[in-house]
Length: 603
Image (cartoon, rainbow, N blue to C red; front, side, top):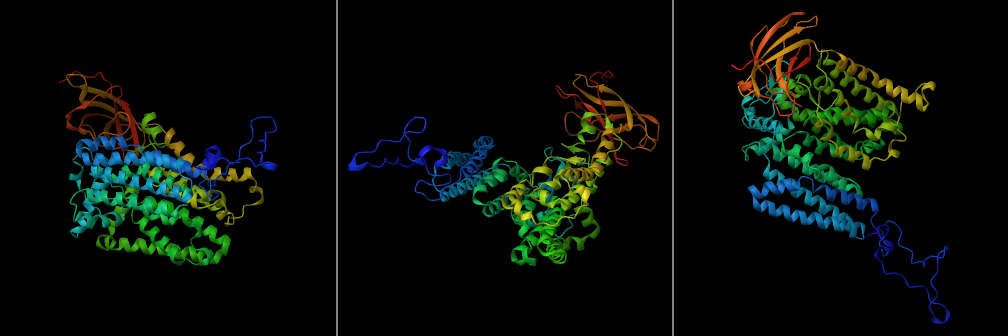
């Protein structure tokens, strides 16, 4: 325990000096006549023996990492006790380790001892992640698709543009539905995750092959990040990567983004050092190779790359000048491209069109809306929008605006270069929080290793004299974001393209519907081909079948559709409203109408 956490720091109190003749000197009293002074406590960060002790905030980081291990652990223990009691016993031992680590965070007296405590916290977290994987390794849609792609690689078959609808017959596997009334059954990620899963799939003939790879990548990336961070920050990495059971859950589901995270750790840690002095060196080459491999793992890395390159060029230009900075940045970019190309060349040669379509699929598939961003205005809080595409335009413009802002104000925004790219997803039609949180450890990696002084000399374009004040710069920054905000405003303010009047046919128990009759009028000037589903709360049901009605609705025309739910029955959710939603693909629109709980008599 250091001196700052307890008076005296745990050392034996010193005796007052003896007076002349051996008699004890009277204890000094303070200026206000209070209690006698005690011996001065050791200074903050000093052990009782005078050696360097751990800082108080380091103890706090260790304690935060320790406490984070409790999150989700009881549920894991409960599952293990029912399925595999020896695993539950191991988790109980982990509980003891968590308690001991909590005591040690406050009791140890040296930095070395606290670093060892941090290592113990990391070890406990790794064991708990392994226990959870042993219990839950079936994976979600990403893991299922990756395992199937790995199996195709093992048999020499193509992995892109290959529909695998049977993978989604299980109800727990989420299906990405598209605005055209269909769904996506194909693999839509760069190939590295499938490549690494392929040899594992030869031994583990199930989806677990994919989840083992992604969980292993998360664990390896966490260890690398832990080792590369300054000692006081290490337990923060344990908490962010493993302790809150956010990223481990995505890893157990088989998300390829965990590979991108692990590969981006060495890229982001102390990133301004890349190319220092005009030479990449061994470290710079490794970082470039990792960046290219990350881009071959998952598309999220694509969004971070331009921000890193722009910021790196600015730092190097401030040090070396324009020509040398451009040269070293080009070599770094070329190294990344070489790594990316090496991992993609086999699949590009096997099926060029399918490969391009596959790796671009998340950006081109026109999936229905989902997430926690501003698109919720049109999907949940109004009756729809006739200009959903403007959310996508706003997302692109926000990304470009933030990139331009990074170039103009890199000395201020450079420390947030690992955070800025994800803001653009908040304006997108697919804005689920996974896009924000799956790479959050990189926020910590940059913040803990890049001081503001590393960016103080970075080059910034010289603004005109009138734009150099603080207020003028704030206005410039706001102006870069205005086009994105304008596009989102257009999308949110646009009315729904169709008017719908819904009459349900109730089941005999009146707790659900067997069909609905809906009168639809196209309010716009373009033909629309609607596809129907329902929602209660968030999300969307599978597509309803159209029994009768015009398939394409001409401008200003009306028709009546008879719709039937999947399986012939849709129950009313308790304490929630049930809405019928109509989607169109070209143009991208959505219209919603309430399904009343009283309708046509049952048949």
